[in-house]
Length: 366
Image (cartoon, rainbow, N blue to C red; front, top):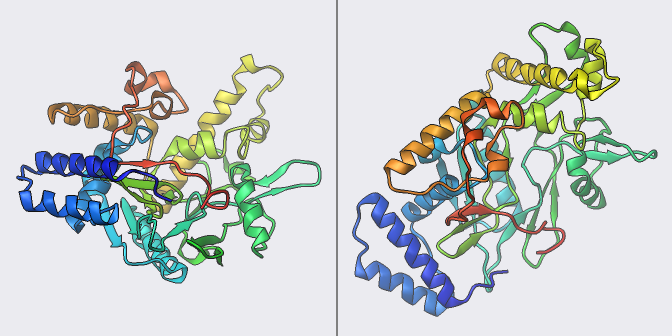
């Protein structure tokens, strides 16, 4: 529920309009300022035009301190669905978003923006962290089958009546909730999901591990904040950097933890860390991810190229007279960090707006 004062919203809206004017070389007309000001006084909020919404969503990507792929922020395609609040309508649009974003493997940056948070009007939230994700099932011995990251959401989905197949890679259902109403459960978007089976260019046994991952990371539980307005349902995507899958999703001990199994298949000495068995297994896992996505025709970027692109982004921003906000711990890749140029700069998170921000899990607070 929005908690900003009218004065705060008015100040943020005016700053946003001024930023657009400066970047687009436009004059902010007195009539537009007055229209927005009066609307905020009357309702506590305001209604951006499509052009303002579009640029605001792009600015939010440009400002997000955790994203390394911001060089492409001007290419973000914006789908305006602010008139939709019903879960059935939103579900239909999510499937369309997934199809458009996947684009046959030629993944395109995309955002679909639904009705903003409001004190007086209905709006909805998407419970899923990403539109695509794999279930996590706690086993009798306390271990997790599947993705431990999604354990809590899997339990919530099961409480709503969903039952998966009980494999390590069960796509999760979609859960959408309209304010003041119970959540609605929709089937996993399996038909629209491009999943990539993982193989290795030089290790034939790798495919026996049965690993796979989905091609498009569509974040769906963050709020987009533009000019003092919170859009609590605004799923957006770019494309994967390989280490996000290889080093984190499949490699982290708190996730799929595949390094011991890979090291064993490689015949590595795992008796002590100093043999660097984890490092060697990690390289081969990331090699498999990049190789498999290329084989499947699914867009992906390696961490060296992504780091170089980020440095190009910072150079462009500096030329435009804008400060770059960046969280060092997120920008530096989780493999071979010091071998990339982003490692050698002391980035700062400047908390710029517009931005994509965290919000409480919908099943906890909505």
